Structures are given as C-alpha cells and as structure tokens.
Amino acid sequence: MENSQKSALGGQAVIEGVMIRSERYCAVAVRRPEGGVSVMLRRLASSENRIPFIRGIPALFSTLKEGLSALHFSAEEVMPEKEKESEGKLAIVSSLLMGFVFAFLLFGAVPHSVVVGVGRLLGVESLQDGRSLEFQVADGVVRLAFFGLFLWAISKMKDIQRVFQYHGAEHQVVHAYEKGLDLTEENLKRMPTAHARCGTSFLALIIVISIVLFACVFTFIPRIFTNEFLNHLAVLVIKVALVLPIASISYEVLKASSRGNVLFRIVAWPGLAFQRLTTAEPDASQRVVAKIALLMCLRAENILGASTEVIMRYNNDNEALETAGAQA
Image 1 (cartoon, one colour):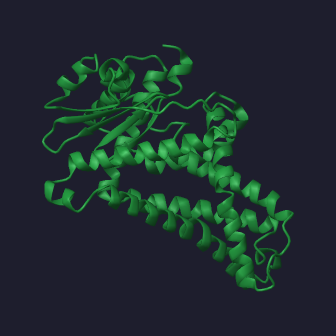
Image 2 (cartoon, rainbow, N blue to C red):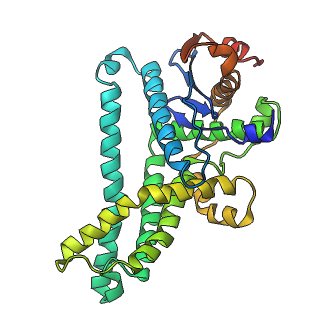
Image 3 (tube, rainbow, N blue to C red):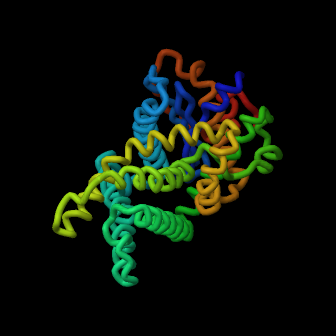
C-alpha cells in the first residue's frame, strides 16, 4: 500500500475498544464482557474538499460524528441491558452539549477570570483588560495548566484508565502499520503509545495557536463596552467565534507535523507531552482489539460490498482475525 494511504489512518479509543478510520471507511472493534469481539464497519461519505485551511472544518465535523457513533456502538455492546434502557443517542448528545458547556467554562471563562483576578491582585493593568498581549499569553498558560490538570484528574479514574490503555493500543497498531511491520504482538508492544496525529495533540495545538491568534486579533479590537463585565463577556464571545478558524489552522499544523517538518514538530511537542496522561501501556488483549479494528478498516471494501454499514459479532479473537484476513 502507498505511504500516503498509510498516513491517512487515524482513530480513537472507545469504551472497551478502538475505532480506526481511513479516508473512506471506519471500523470499530469492541471487547464484549464475555470475551467476544463486536465490530461495526461503516462506509464514510466522500469529501472532495482538499483546500488547505478549509478542508479541516468538514473533516473535524466528520470526525466528531463518527466518534459519537463509535462511542454509542461501544456503549451498546458493553453495557448491561438494564443500563442500555436509560442510554441512547439522545443521552450521548446531551452529554456532548454538557461537555461543550463544561469546556467553555473550564478552558474559557474560568482561565479568563483567573487572569483578571491575578491582574487586579497584583495591580497589573495589562492583565485586566482582556485584550493585551500579556493577557493572551497569561490566559493561554492558564488554559494549558487547566488542560493538564483536567487530564491528570481523569486519568486517575479506573474506567478512564482502561480507555487510555485502548488509546495507547490504537497508536501502537497505527505506528506498526505505518512502519510496514507485521502486526504481531512482539512488534506491537515495541511501538510507542504516543502519536503525532492524536486528538490530545490537536487540543493542545488549539490552545497554543489560540495564544498567537488572540494576541494578533485583540491588538486591533478596541474596547467594545464601557461596562467592564460586558466588555469581558464580549471578548469571550469573540474567542468562541474564532474557535473554528483556530481548529482549522491546528488541523493543518497537525498534518504537517506528522510529515517530519522540524518546525511543526516543535510546535506539536506539547501535545505529545500531554499524551503521557491520555495514553497508557495496553495489555495483549487490548492490542488484539486494536489490531482487529485496523485490519477490518483495511479490508472494509471487500467486507462491506454494496452495504453502507455492517455489524459483526465474534465469539473469539481468532474468528474476527480470520474475517480480517489475519492470524492471531
């Protein structure tokens, strides 16, 4: 397979499993409570957009959509029947909306307020107006600190620890595949659990790039309201409006960093550092699930045929690997 095709693989961890996606297909493999493996294979809507700094936005929405679908599938396969009755797509959407509100508060409003408070405490005027270069740098540093503390806190939760192990397994199989190695247990366990093209790196990049962009933008924006509260609120609203452009730039930087550009790799370093919190060394069973997801994604065209989506359930790993065209 061509290297360009290999570099297109990505994915995410789900509940007791892994999702791997290429440009055309998405495969989710989940370890069921009794030990079997469930696989969902989907054909993705084709995208003709290849224009840099524009292609990132639809790609991000597509990734979010497929990620939610993968999480819903994994929850359905893993949860007991009684718990399933109280769960569903509506619950996932509600959780997502609450997550957006929480993210705005934790990584937007609260850091902003902290910097303003510190500015008042120290009597530093440039840290009180919300628009100065000093404010944007301080705000970005606080957001990075909050991001790290948040990841550290959730990494201590038992269920999240398993998700982070599957996250590490996802990266290991992608690394091995991109290096052209056989996906044996011996090869996989030698692979790093961090990867340049990772959602953690993407989020860290958004924070880093936002510092630069906010510093440039707010230099040219005058004070909007005389009322201090309304003025700070306006600054936060403008920052929210700039999230998509920042995400689009971050998407391009992330793609460039994976191609070996030294400058972009330096910019992407914080994301790799944060992955020490969001990935963990998986066990052999978890690596097998990630391997099944990757191989199913590669064989998707043969397995799907004319179908848009198929769900397959296997009693053991060997059955799943046989369908994927591999051996245990």
